[in-house]
Length: 311
Image 1 (tube, rainbow, N blue to C red):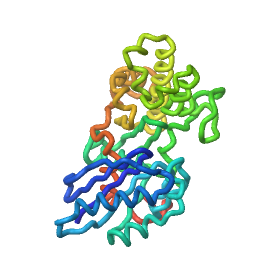
Image 2: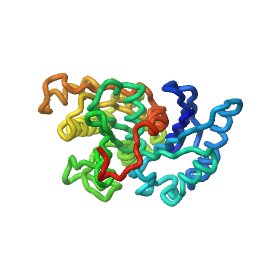
Image 3: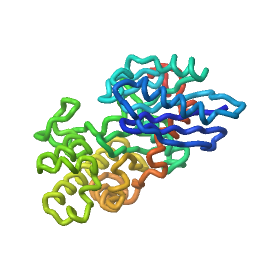
């Protein structure tokens, strides 16, 4: 039986096929129109069908990682994302059943990425770990004693990007003030580029801070220092809240900040109530496919029961 994993990003979607613990196929497709989830599902159907031409076995489960608050027990999207605004009202379970005759497993994208790292990547062998996805926002997921943390309202471990780190800081898109995201994230970075009249750099994102023509500029270096400081603070908060053995860094900015891992490590060793070196920080081993790989593993990690009965 084959398990398919899909990670629905805003600009691209990743697809993975796993069978008997082996990753058989992975690809990425461009999101041509994010105004409706139906468009990307049509493209994904063609991609999946193309793989299964000539295969005698069929799809047993399809896992979907979505950038939103998700009720994984009941396959429900609980909050609207800026892209795919109709996904909350779309019957994904029905689509999976009618199109593939398969079972749907739905999960938040950061949690799916951590599951992927747990089975195939950096978190393998670690029972207490945290995933930080550094991209447009700051996503997060936590695993304690080998079990994914979800909570009574499906928020647990997911919102480290919305922990308040500056009481008099900027307004966040969650309507909070001084969240980690509003003080340093991909969208915060784009706002900074506009403030210095360099909106042309938004497409480059974090890479613009490391460009040779910008690297010696005090303005750009101040922006970079702020971003690194926010990431350090978020990691310190993660350690004090969840006491992980490992923090895995994923997302579009993770590659760029990997050079700062020793600085992140030093900050944790200095400020956290843990023995020096007790918490490791590593860049994702699975990169942009972590969420899709984790989504393909949801059939063995998510049970159909209510949160109050979850162990």
